[in-house]
Length: 117
Image (cartoon, rainbow, N blue to C red):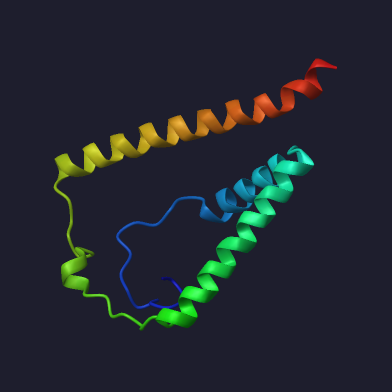
């Protein structure tokens, strides 16, 4: 959306996306190196199958038309009330804490066999 529709107002921007996305990619790459060969090959086969299905569907149904986003209907200009904002902030902080904590736990579980030696 940032590249195709840079003119749109953004009511929310993900914090630290330039750090979080590469770190997540590195964690997933590391996790993939820990898979058995059979699981890795199965994943590659499923990916290739998904790409083939996508390619066939795009040929059959077409690539799809460009869409115009109705900014008024999207609610991009809506400003939450202070009470709604507090509630949204509370939910975001809870999500942040849980995802961060679970990411640390998952990383430690992967490192545990190396730490046991």
